[in-house]
Length: 350
Image (cartoon, rainbow, N blue to C red):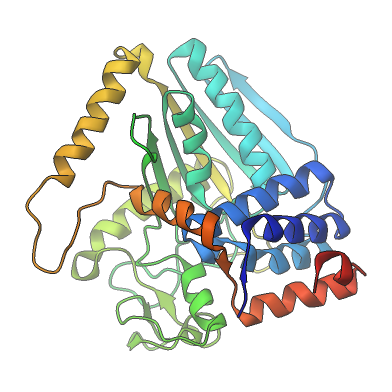
């Protein structure tokens, strides 16, 4: 179970992806995003995903070098077809275009379809926040395998359907919310399985609708994730349905499960230029003051500190840049096997 410097992990991911057929630019983009997820503490979206992406390339589910087409657009909207390219590269490009539209129009939005897994959704709204804008993104897995039961159900009918909103501020780390509308992201259950750990009750039900703490109950035994909210799961369920509409129906991907389908992240993006509403400096200063106001609240029993949304990811990143990133044996073994397959074991230090 090694702890690996972040720059070495990026080198490993980059070279393996290139050997699998990704261009240098695509490989750099994917490696930067997955290791960024590890740095932020979201290991479920980190290098553990690289072997899966390479397997999808081999099966034709990800197409390296795929074209990026703007299917239609107006001054404030965009529809993009990724042609099964790497989702990281497709969504980065789409978000850059939406940001540019928002600069001239005050607000802009896009739908993106036929792209592979986009990883940590926060990465794209944060692009807007760095430009002094508010960024929003939702994602859905199209008609591929589902994992989340509707509130009151026990069969998977929805994706984990994440949503992120990122806001500019003067804080040391960005203020944003990035969350699945299920009780937990499916990748966190898969990470627990890879590490041989149980999961908390309240994440998953088995095929009979009973609470499960075995992570294998989800994929291997026909179980389902629960919607966010516990006994008030109808709230997470309702939010998930809206995201299904924005990212699945509005994009044209549809809903439900077609077993022939590739993994396909449909996305809805929106960017709002703060300058179209009020002076940006005043806005950022007030957001910063809001964070301080929240952190100064009297703490409940058992809490040492109150964090603003996104602060834990910032702290994780600063710490892991110094200490390195823990990689479980199962993932490290898969990376090593790929390095051997591609003849780069010595070059990558395996």
